[in-house]
Structures are given as C-alpha cells and as structure tokens.
Amino acid sequence: MVTEQDIIDLREAYERWQSLDIVVEYGPLRAYAEHDTVQRLWRETIDPAVALVAQNSHKTADGVYVAEAPSPWHAFFYLRAEQQYVYRAGRPLESTGSDEKPHGSEHLFFRGQRCASWEFMSSLRRKDPVAQGIERRAVAALVEYFRSYFAAEDDIARNTALCFAQHYGIATDLADISCDSDIAVWFATHPVGNACPGGEREGIVQAVSWAGQEIVAM
Image (cartoon, rainbow, N blue to C red; front, top):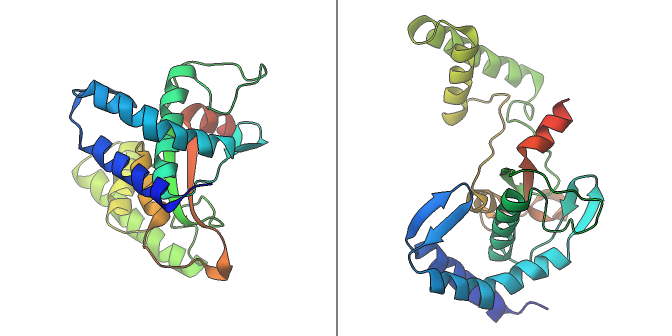
C-alpha cells in the first residue's frame, strides 16, 4: 500500500535527483558529481518505488507490458529505470524468463497522453476529412516553400517542412515522441484537473523501442 507520505518522499527524491550536477551523460546513463547522494536516493527511496510498479506489471502480448503507477513520480522513476535497463541489457525489467533473450543496447522512446483510451495517432488523423484537407494543403505549401528556397531534394524539403509544421501547430502525419520520460509523464498528467470523458483512466505513457518499431513496420 502506498501512503501519501511515500509519494511526498518520492517527489522530494525526484526534486533532489534532478538538481544534482551531471558529470558525464551517455545515452540514458549518467554519472553525477555527488555519486554517494545518488546511490542513497535510489537505494532508500527510488528503488522500492520502482519495484512496486514492476510487481504490478504484466505481459499482454509479445514485447508488450502494462504497468500502473500510483503517482507521476512512481511512473517517472519506473520508466527511467526501464530505460536504463533496456539500454544495458537489451530487454525490459519484467522479462526474467529464459524465453526472453537479451539483445544489444536499445533506446526507448516515450509518448505521454492524458487519457488512456486515446489512440497513438498523429494530430492529422484525429481531424475530420475536411479539416485534414486544409492541413494537408498548408503542409504542401510549406514543402514547396522549402523546396524552392532551402532544399531542392524532395525528401529533405518534405521532412523539414513536416517538422516545421508540427512545431508550429499545423496538423501533420507526425506523432511526437521523446527520449525523456520526464516529458512524457508531464504530458500524461497535464492539464491538471481535466477529467477524461466517460470516467476512463487518466494518464498513459507508451514506451517503444526502435527495434520494436522496425519489427512492426516489416
């Protein structure tokens, strides 16, 4: 059982951990100037929280695991630990069976959404056909602009225009993901106080690996 004090302690550990100076950063791995402080924070407060979430996780399909966290800080540290373990061992924390073979270093990417039932889709796909047409014409105009003034090569012009459009609020076929689980948890928990329709579960972070997406695409 998680108490309110447990959540307060974990939030304070999060704030302390985020304030520490990083000496070296390589992928999701970090070395801190205050090494002993980091070790104590993880051993005394963070590791038990990660273990609690891991105990409640379960496998729903090949390569797919679902876990529930009692607070945003539990979610963040669980995803952070997952990210580090996958990078080191090439497999998720929960895959302890002999059928789960380790692979090479793997990067995880995260997407946070406020409502659990929302599909993982681009902003363009969430619009009706008429609105999609308007957004596509805006992107086409940007592609032509970039092709004329910056990059004659079609793929470079189109990809640059798509990223530009996405950044400035034009709906595209791109779906935002992040290498930082902190950013994903923020999007999954904000805006605060806005209930999801139909009383559904609030806040979901999806973690995907590059190799996993390659398998889906093949």
